[in-house]
Image (tube, rainbow, N blue to C red; front, side, top):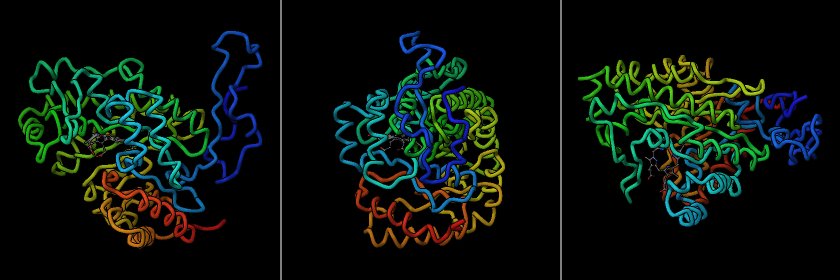
Length: 401
Ligand code: CP3
């Protein structure tokens, strides 16, 4: 007796619907209690996945086609996103309102054939909840009012409780999962401990990350202390997202690629491993796959593949076929169209999508994505051309059995 089907989502074939489908949108009410009983007896019924292509591909199981989703698929290139953001007043208010975050998460799914939704939030919610004071200055990107610049600030740093200051992230995850009603899986995410530290120490984006890299060489123990706290915070937030309904998780290591090989190993990858070691890998006996994306990490693929993730995300500078030969026996691969391709025309987009599919070649284990987030000036019709191209061109790379 439970609120979930005994059959794990990942065993459901694409397009196959559960016989209990008719009941799926109702609340589940325990037969041991009447509906008028205590509210704790009433739970949300989690519908089964109708499209589990993404989860299967992440686990390198056979799929009928290559699933596709796009980093930053909900964002400023969509007029409807800008409209919701205007109503919210700011990007941060949008993130902090679960109802509006749900609305924008679903917007790209209404327009395009996407095989996943990604939680609408930001990696910098963690340092914000640590008290660093996140704000977005117009045209400048994210900034912190109180960056970590001295030992006292580092000493006071503590991992926030996801049920406290970050409650809005978890509420958004549950609300999105309910609103999706099993259409496609929900991806949860967080930044890598090192990438978070970059913004926390510098106070914003940087061309050369001079302050944090000076700390890394001069006061490594201080940086290690920040990274330990960050790793705990990231693992706790990802686990809370999984608990709230995220069906896969991704770690964004945007700035790990700015490090030397030994520094990457010691200050970025080691803490990604730490996060993965504390991750809840299953929810209700269903595997929750994890993706690790280090931008600029192409030269360290073997080490990333050994970190304990199910899938390695690639930026556009990597050759997908080459990456597959190197690590494709161990992990799935995600990527890696240059987001700039989407500034061209539908014909060019289709040609370049075909090139990526060719490069990976036959078989499962590829999740189509961009090599980094969608750019603001992307014409939405090019995104439509991309998702259509992946769905039309990819079935021939998969076995029909
Ligand atoms: O992918 C998705 O659709 C999910 C939402 C998402 C956002 N940020 C929303 C967002 C995700 C997964 C992120 C991750 C994120 N945030 C990263 C890692 C990935 C990457 O892009 O490298 C980083 C480094 C951040 C920090 C951050 N947040 C930056 C650098 C910026 C400014 C970027 C810009 O384009 O101005 C943000 C703001 C942000 N996060 C926006 C969105 C949709 C734009 C905000 C707006 O509406 O003005």
